[in-house]
Length: 263
Image (cartoon, rainbow, N blue to C red; front, side):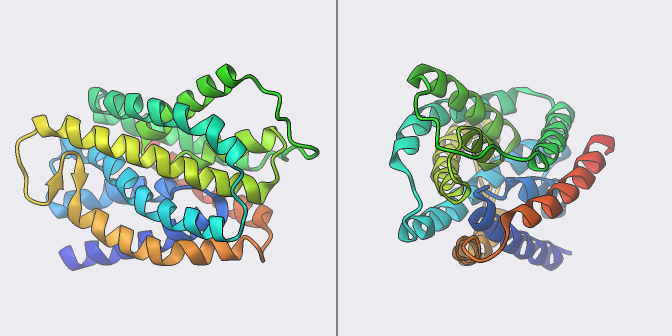
């Protein structure tokens, strides 16, 4: 059964890597549900499963989005104007979200995640605005919005791309550029939140294979596959219609959301 768990981690990493490159998301929308089902196979106590799924997902997002961000940089798609306005708020919010995740009961955290999935799946189906980018937004407002995005992302174990990409599109940033900026933002959220989860997890009793709330073996299996596949996903954004991919992924998220909420 342990071998099966490893195989599922590798498969999840492949999907997460492709999604990170193609849609600018860290893969947490796939990884968190997968880990909720797989961590008990690795012997994780039920009361820690959801928190560890969130923390481990964010740890894999660090590796996935690092690879994806490098690929987008090579393609010249990263707008440093938007990076400078988003990153500080995303990082501060991520630390708060990680702390909040350790305070909530697992069943509430799982329900919050399922609701976030449902909202994001609907959001993917709504047509985005087009036109010249809106650059006159107040820095304070952007800091507040990005802090909220960072907090929610760390709370439910997603990289933030599912929230950052729609935000940037609402500001009329071109889709491929929004995806590239989102990859950098997801990396920032992941690093900040994982460090917080490691520090907060020091109060737990020592367990083999654990680094705070991060499950080392699951993180390793998912990260290896996702890092290898993220550059491929980034390259595919230049060739395939992103809209069709969003529609199919949105339908998948609805099913996962309903399953987690009921479960």
